[in-house]
Figure 1 (cartoon, rainbow, N blue to C red):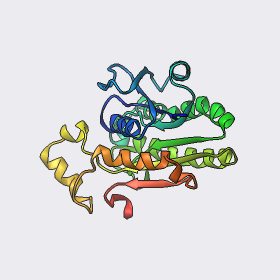
Figure 2 (figure 1 turned 90 degrees about the horizontal axis):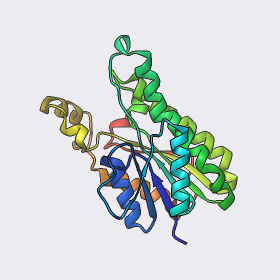
Figure 3 (figure 1 turned 45 degrees about the horizontal axis):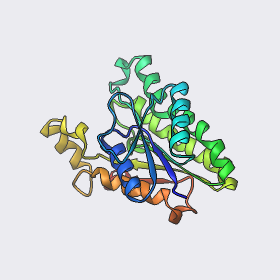
Length: 234
């Protein structure tokens, strides 16, 4: 039977690349979006705001009714609200944690019981190298991405006996629209910190996800895979 994957924040950038790679690998792929669906007829679009448990539940219900039980969950959706800590409002902090970290709890809580019943599941959180290294002006974002590591490792220990794995991918700077919006000086500063001297391509993050989703990664759980060009080494 063809396995079903659910990728959040999959209408563009890294999320879209992940969804398309999993589709190429033979999965039925549901791709979530908040306002604009992904421009790919091979994906099953699902409207979902991951900050709402109601919308998360409705998204899973729709996927289960049309594709089947989700066996591969890729939690990629997230936001940034950068500012130096003295200027960061409490809403800036809590909103980012809600979208980036608490959403992982919501999604996993809804996905886990069907996975337990099938005795198979892959949970993959898209974190960031910033969650490991920290970053000035991103205390909220770094905290949310670091929190995904503790969440994944706790899930890994709770559900290993049910053949459910939970892992984290920590990308470095990726060649997406966010990079395009930076000035040349900002891009050069970021590149100077990357030992490989370039930005990652979204498909390179997707390749790591595809591996963790596959049967070949069945003995890998509770780990962090950095796809960061060496940024996190120090």
